[in-house]
Length: 187
Length: 257
Image (cartoon, rainbow over all chains, first blue to last red; front, side):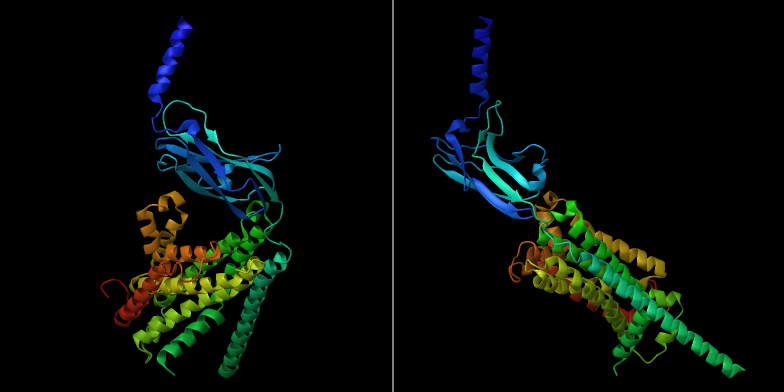
């Protein structure tokens, strides 16, 4: 009896708290591609489309981007991959759709997964709707060829240091010559 | 030979043959070497997109190059006052306008030398992605405007400063205040007030313009509006420095002079 009462109360709470405009399972997410292959240090774009298949406008939705490693041993901080991972969506009319472009930077090399989830701003805890996984393969490469940097990093200051030293020596000699000339004149 | 050219020649000799400018340029090259070495070899910095690496190096070069011009200008008059060499300069037939103009242009030579040093680093970092040319071109335009603005500001401060230490301190404080908005988080500059602050401040506007060209690969004319405040600031500050300098350059300094 008590269980029945609790279940009835929970159903009543869901019906009351759920925002009427939240489209729930009538909302779907599609992405423009499911595989990305790029190099470390590059940026790439993923476009997602949130479609409202319901009969009423879907409002109060949040789209969230997530990044994870598909292999153990690789630490991924999604904040490094995209600085703008949470988007508060404008109401989507019935049968309408909205497209979101996500800019990501390839921060780690390896096999990674990217997905977008949509969830309501308020109301009871509901399962987020997740879009298809985008499999991202980042090949390891140094964005800069470090070879040759050392001669440049040492060479230019060395050249300037030599010029400065040569100038000081030249000035010292000139000063010494002029002071000895003045001394000779005095004597 | 016009008096300005004579003053300029003398100032350049003092700066470069005297060794002060060479020492500052050496310090500048050491800084750029450290940055270039770190971004090329350090794993944590190496993941930066190559355009961002060039942008980082160029922005540091522009900022520090303009700082060198500012410091030289801030010392130009108050320093001569303290070294008691201004009196002999004022006794020459050169007009006060010629003296101020010569000192202003001489202080800009520090920026030009800094830019010449920067070329090698930007070429090294930007090679392979074809942005070295655009980066250097945007750097010379923005850096020159900022150097004119800051050097003129330094001359103005130096004109009124009663001590050289005061002139250098105030100039550095102003420079830090102008550069402070570049450190604001992106969220703080996303609203209209933040955008306005970035556009009005010549330093942030100039650095933003460089970023647009180097990182985003935008065309020169697409974001040209961002150059408005550096251009206006350079023109107004230079005009004020010359006009006020022509009237107020004297031995004592101070606001009542």
